[in-house]
Amino acid sequence: MVADFEPKIVAFCCYYCAYSAADLAGSLRLQYPSNIRLVEMPCSGKIDVRVILEAFEGGADGVYVAGCLEGDCHFLKGNIRARKRIGYVKKLLDEIGIGGERVEMFNLSAAMGPRFAEIAAEMTERIRRLGPSPLNKAYKKEPASSTAG
Amino acid sequence: MIIAEGKPIAEVAELIKDAKKVLMVGCGGCVTVCLAGGEKETGILASALRMLRQQQDNPLETVEVTLTRQCDPEYVEMLDKYVTDDIDCIVSLACGVGVQFLAERYPKWVVPALNTKFAGGTVKHGQWEERCGLCGECILYRTGGICPIIRCSKSILNGPCGGSQNGKCEVSPETDCAWQLIYDRMQALGKLDMLLEIQPVKDWSKARDGGPRRVVREDVMIS
Ligand code: SF4
Ligand code: SF4
Image 1 (cartoon, each protein chain N blue to C red):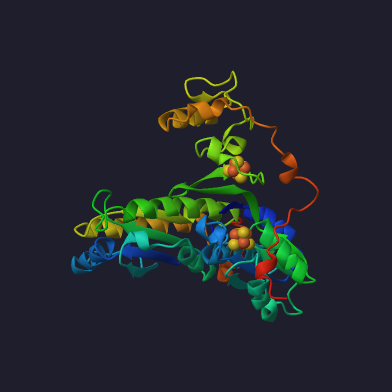
Image 2 (image 1 turned 90 degrees about the vertical axis):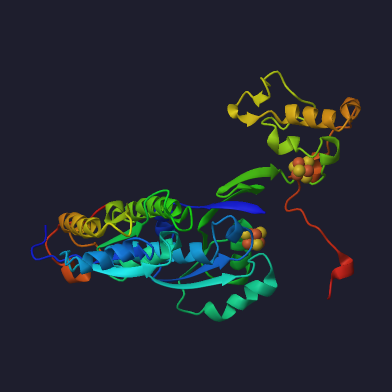
């Protein structure tokens, strides 16, 4: 593991749940790692493979999509579709040596502020364990840690 | 439409391993519809290849263009301004036809990013199936609109064979016996007697024979 590695994680959050849950976590004064960059989405089903890849190309070490609980999507099936797309991206990231574990799908409701903080911590921990993305130049010259593949 | 499927990324990466700058060309026709080689898939493949190469400390530069169709010179021409001297290789995300049209026009190394599969259609979102074997002389009018060339595993013209079991083909329980379908459909149409008519041998010279087939329409030629 690379010492002092602070992962950069992009979280694509559905406006109807995760994004509001983040607000709630804030109002509740819950602590969650500052590694998370939030991107608001109209629905988790809006997630596009290209956008996730762009995040990785832009230097993200991890990405996750957070949508409503299954069965509760405001647009009925957006979160189910997002999950499938995440499955596709996982395979693709494995294929190109970045590693599918760097991307994940989570489900929560707008009322789950504490869960939001927990997910942020969980993902930060996971990425810290995996080490920097093989594309993350800032850490690239460190002795071999994660040349996934 | 023509149905195609992306080659594994590693395979495409290997094909362009000596190139520093590639022109990635999507097609707005069939392969956009079957989600194999449209603008979106071109973007995904380009990004994946760049990330792969970045890890090998051998960065790849990509230029992405999606043409309306790659099987029509009037659209292919629009690529001229992108095919600059510094482009080491062109990656086509069209069917095999598109790849060849690009290779015919440009003196560059042109590689296919897709495997072209068949002439078919969408049976449901995300699933495509073969329907026509491009035999050159359609006989659907006497088979109830069901193609025996492609949908019968043996392409027989006087089925069903002995491998037809409960409406399924012996090759797989998921494959309907085309001749059972044909029989049922002709029966429903009240045209079973048509199946009893003796047919002349099918003229396969209209299919794959004598090099590339050609269709000519003098009346629409403008020069
Ligand atoms: S080049 Fe191939 S995929 Fe593109 S429109 Fe023509 S036939 Fe269809
Ligand atoms: S009979 Fe020939 S042209 Fe007609 S659908 Fe079958 S293969 Fe295609």
